[in-house]
Amino acid sequence: MLSSKQIEVFYQVYKSNSMSGAAAKLQISQPSVSKTLAGIEKNLGFKLFLRKGKKLHPTLEANELFEYASIVTNQLKNFNYIANTYKSRSFDYINIGTTPSLAESIVPKIINNYLKDNSETRFNLINLNSIDLVEDRYKPDIDITICFNAKNQNNVDSVILQTGTHKLVSPISYNLANSIEIKEIIDLPYIEITNLLSLYSEESIMNYFIKNNLEMNFVSKSDSYSAGLAMIEMGLGVSLLDHNTCSRANLEKVKVSDIKDIDFNYSINAFIKKNVVKNDLIKFFDYLSKLN
Image 1 (cartoon, one colour):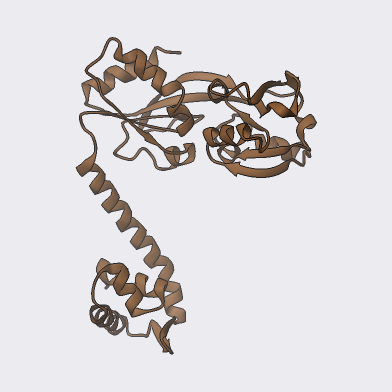
Image 2: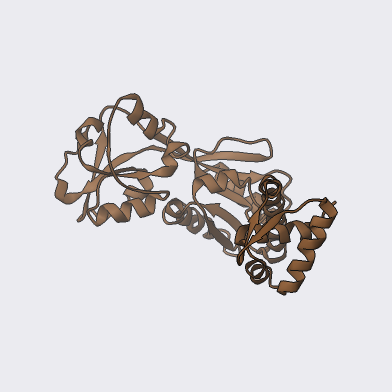
């Protein structure tokens, strides 16, 4: 049976192919790494590394074990992350996890209106992309999550804050019409917003392209609406963006057009963990529940 510390030493030796590299990463002495590794091999009853010159080469057994060592190491990192989060989180603030584009549009407006009658409340915005916000399963440093098209889950209560549809945004120099079909832009440089693949639009935009045999001229990609808008304003290409991001566009640099042939709809959802005991948080979520 190996301890978590021994597994961590094995993991770092495997990744760096050297005792010195593992020692530097672990911030311990090289003799300590060597002694620990010798103890691991004695405990297991077989060799994990063979020395060839100045480098260590993993055995077949080490290659098999590394996958499991990676899982253990990542779980330890997650444990320490969550422990540190509880230690350092802002308990006097309402911690909102949201995307960069929403943190620049709808969320500040909501907070501003709420503070007019609740001036003592404090907020902390934590920016992540939608995939991280959903897949991280509401880490302990986030009280409320506000993001696009997230599905309801058993451990949270949710409300819809806003619904809308995507618009085509293009550099003003392209001189596109006010209303346009998707097939009209297939030859134009296209900026893919990668989260649209699964989260931002109810109808997957990428799936729509594939299903309709639209071979788009992809020139760049981003996981952020805000970054996409910045690239369009620099003249790099066109993209489909949400209404809130479009409202912040510099209309001297870009044109916002309606899509004729399909509505790429979205919703913006707010989630709060169940069994919340902070009164100011419950009050704020009740406020959100009445917005739409």
